[in-house]
Length: 193
Image (cartoon, rainbow, N blue to C red; front, side):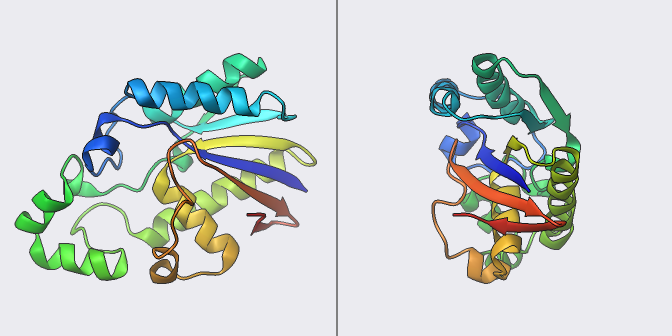
């Protein structure tokens, strides 16, 4: 069994402003750096054997804050990236609703809608496979994985058997620097929270 501690990166200005980030790479803002430092302090008492992170800067920065406190290296994976939201990247909900009203309404109802970019199911399969691979590489260890809101929601939905519309109703699963505990056992991912 591998214990996976999923953590979302600290806040960026785009988080604060309600902008879709996707594969764009804004860095942590002042609050995000404090959140990452607080995450590192919270995890100092945990036995963590390895740290993995998305290769996007906001996740890497967060992971490096923790790694510096735990004297561990950070391993990077593009498979842990946020969902690619295509042309919506950098836009607020209001801007998207004005430019793509039908697609925005579909997104509000179903969680799917951008005309380009990545589908939720494709992203979910990508991150589930990444976590299962990390679990296989670290049997009987505890691994911190720093990723993004979309992948955290996708992993939690997969682990709990919820559909995307059902999961969208949950809150608190992917707050900045929130930790969600999961377990990889026998090539299965289950939620402990």
